[in-house]
Length: 226
Ligand SMILES: [Zn+2]
Image (cartoon, rainbow, N blue to C red):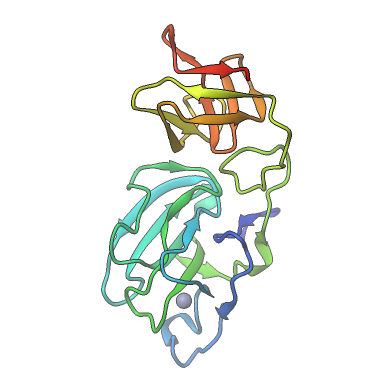
């Protein structure tokens, strides 16, 4: 039984792509699993796919028969999520061993493996047994807005702007500390709105995520007053 209160963040943004095959459908096509063992979403080639739960990436691999190029992520409670039929080239944005947060991009959809058209096969297992994820899928995790957690960022009036000084780029993270994963980067001289002061005084939240204004005594970004 899936854990009580399980919330699976929808693997696509926006979460409005059509479902082309539900869990359990077509048992004659999938005799070993007594029906389709995930949910298929019809998405155009190279649509971004996002992690449904926080966890560790355990497979970034291709197979020509079943899932094609796919990512598997291991989660708490003996759960594993699988994202199948990803694209042919430069399809993954994670590596095996990476820690990911819910809502973090894993890669790009495609049509590899046993697939008759571009789609995402989204599957969640408890142990080795897939279950129907549909009752657990949410489009927002609620709670405080953390970039990369899949929540819509509320549009706010920026507090001020910063200009990036780091050469050539600065890491943009999902939370206000270096313990959070890198989700983006910004280039030297780039301007960014500051939407929120994050945690400690040197971290600020921009529309792309959190950046540190200083590190080891060096200024990485300067406040711009116009
Ligand atoms: Zn499928």
